[in-house]
Amino acid sequence: MNYLDYLVIVIYLIGFLGLGYVFKENKTSSDYFLGGRSISWLPLSLSTMATQLSAISFISAPAFVGLKDGGGLQWLTYEFGVPLAMAFLLIAVLPSLYKSGIVSVYEYLEKRFDASSRLLISFVFQISRSVATGVMVYTMALILQATIGLDFWISVAIIGIITMIYSFQGGMKAVIWGDVIQMTILFLGIVICLFYGLSELGGFDNFLTHVDKDRINTVDFSKWGFNNADGNDAFGFWPMVIGGFFLYASYYGTDQTQSQRLLSAKNMPTLKKLLLANGLFRFPITLVYCIMGLVLGTLLFQDTSFQVAMENVYQANIGTLEGKKADLMVPVFIIQYLPNGVIGILIVAIMSAAMSSLSSTVNSLSAVTMEDFVKRFKPNMDNKKYISTSRLLSVFWGLVCLFFAFFAGNIEGTVIEVINKISSVFYGPILAVFMLAILTKKTHALGANIGIVVGVLFNAYLWLYVPEIFWFWWNALGCIMTIVVALGVSYIIKREVKENVEVVYHSGKKEVLLLVGYFVCILIFSLMLPTLLG
Image 1 (cartoon, helix red, strand yellow):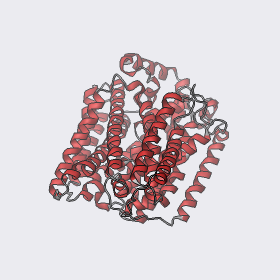
Image 2 (cartoon, one colour):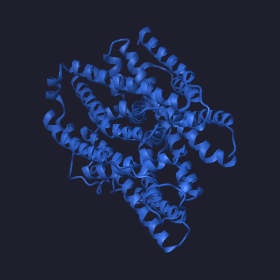
Image 3 (cartoon, rainbow, N blue to C red):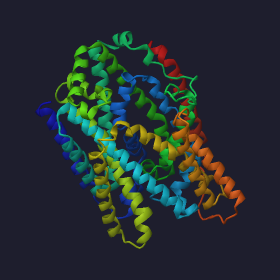
Image 4 (cartoon, rainbow, N blue to C red):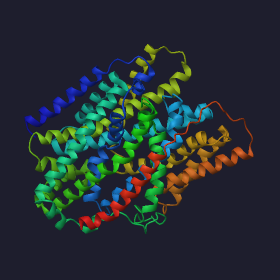
């Protein structure tokens, strides 16, 4: 790196400091947490995808595809459930949540059931999301330290302080437009790596000649995920589609970091376009960074200087990067092969991945803390006090995430996998509670609460005692168990049922057909991909 790279980084950071100032005018809770419901579908879509297209997508996913044992283009199966989940949310879940006028998505559960369901799920969200985000910042700081020599604490401080400042000032508008910029930079970084990698390989034809044929297989119908004790029965078509459907329906519909953006849509047509965009655009973006990972992995095996550079960085940082050698592939390629100036842009892309996830988390955690807890004790708070308290909460949660980043070192080696599994323990049962709240009339609060407890305990049992079942299945099995138990308890034990919430269905036949048809198209394309690359 030289002065040009550092200049690019400094300009980027100064620009984000000014972003919060531009959007500092926030007068109500809707302004601060929902952007005044005035933002169009395109920036909301880019913001949603930027949160999802995180450090995992830019660094770890390409490393899995191109380098890790058992990896390859089967990563694409992660996307199969997305269009189906978007279709379900469009017609069955999100219209009711949107029309209710809520800020915290968990508020709907209190309106339909009681406060216990709302507070329990809100609390679980706050703890799990802050830990996960802290670990993500920690990982990015390690990568920056190993590749460009930036001290770990400086990396964490820069990412955290800049993000907290613009999130503190601008609220959701600053977060969304910051995500738009970061998404653009991040995708540009992926494309740059792809084309420079192909150039170093001598072109696309040479890439096809040398690519590892075992890594271009995508869809496996023989793997059901029920015999996965040794890890060899994962990534099959059925667990990835069915489990993925429940996972993404819960993630986009009931996780505050994503649902808050959907609730920020200016009207129902905007919400519809937002869901369509997420259903249609995620797969092409994932395909691009997967091909990029395949290209860089092929280059690594062809170029001994690339191998030596990775080994040197790994050995120099083995105490902190033990077990994460593959994740060095993308950042070492950036430093080793790209020209100055472009290196700065790519380092900014790594920072963007971390800052986008952190800003989304900080704003969402502030929203649920304010709406689900603070307002419970101070319901008559005026707008000025509300905004000032919300801003302080955003700083508080930013510091909490950074705290986890600084102290994640001893547990980070397995924590990403553990967090993914923890999410899948809860995602299915949480989705089930929202489905019961919206789609059934006779389920009462006691039934819903018992159902979610049993569903979570059932998934925990699968995790601890049934390792043969691939964790993607937990999302579906936990949801089904919760629904069955909740309906059974509500039928056996008669209780009064609240009827003070409006249930809204969207007549989105055209959109549903488009999303289902798109699912068929990406499946056919994925089946053809090994032939195209072979």
